[in-house]
Image 1: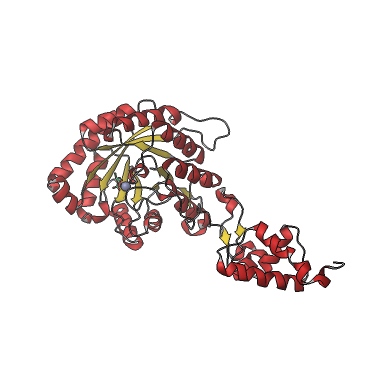
Image 2: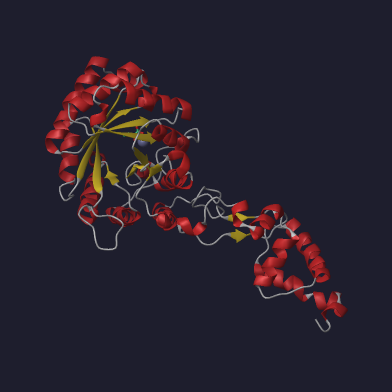
Length: 405
Ligand code: KIV
Ligand code: ZN
């Protein structure tokens, strides 16, 4: 059966920029947008023009830089859709439309909160007023742009019947994508699956729009919830590189894409992402935003392909499949490392020494292994030059073994 494709909507430049203490210049955004275009994302959310003059300028620059860009050799035949965020007001929508002028495929993304807590405390609007505003503002956006996305903010905490009604109104007013945000990262996978499957089943006219998911990571479930949403029938995933974003961040693009890729047999979904560019893209975003990637971060962390325990290293030396479910080269990362530390075994030590052109017999290896363990017990890992140094003492400690060897 042919696999269905998931559209990858990257919001590193918008929700990602909402990470505390992160501000990207227009030039920074253009550099990331070029990389995202090469990576193969379908939609780039470039910013929120009403937030500041600088952001409006940045969205214009991104639209002009990559909004018409395709060249031979790229893994795409059309430029990415360039999207700008707008609250459900005429002013925001006008600004978004104007800033997208240079894009061949512009999209306006407008949103309004629908959950009871937001309606009451933030908006001070009744249900009727919320529905009316959605209908009016989606229709207004649609008069300016053929591609309109609507998000019922805090959808995951909205009463389902009211959510269905809001979505029906947005679709009737011309929304072409309906994005379901778990704005505060509150749901868990089974629940989010039910929300998306419920929308697919109950909303009249849902087949006229692409259904999208946008998950935050407050409980560390953003990637799992995104996959659950896709399983429930969504066909667009909103993601950021390195999972950056408001508070605990968004679902990480590299995690969701590699889960779909590595477990294709379960998900049956494809993307157009060139996975070999995931690691370089992560590095670029980290360098530009100053947000350091944790060493143990899935897919792109420094330790994602490093093995320390003796049992694991022994397995890796026998077959990489024992402890690696992906190859580092598939995500463009440097090759796997066997880190020599206090948990490492003889087998890994011997292999590393051989790779450094130091060949020992069994007795010599025993001697070096015990000095190695003594040092490693006090320190984390031992670099190659210090390993070689440990073997230099051999001839003094065991002169006979070296003679004639
Ligand atoms: O998290 C959220 O609700 C958002 C919306 C603007 C889609 O970022
Ligand atoms: Zn968000």
